[in-house]
Length: 79
Image (cartoon, rainbow, N blue to C red; front, side, top):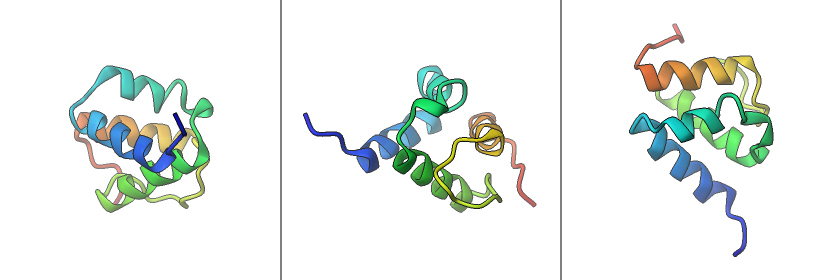
């Protein structure tokens, strides 16, 4: 099966919205293993939802991880 990072990002996003613990783990503690296209798309969706105010770069750094956690907990971190 061919990899489809955009589809993967969409599935991760849906899972995060449902507070799925596996998706949360993969996009926080395991984010370095995710495809940069997936991370970039998740960053974009986080930004659109008001949870990410940093540069969209496809790098799963601490700001991305904090934003993912805030999204799942429903805590807006971007002013």
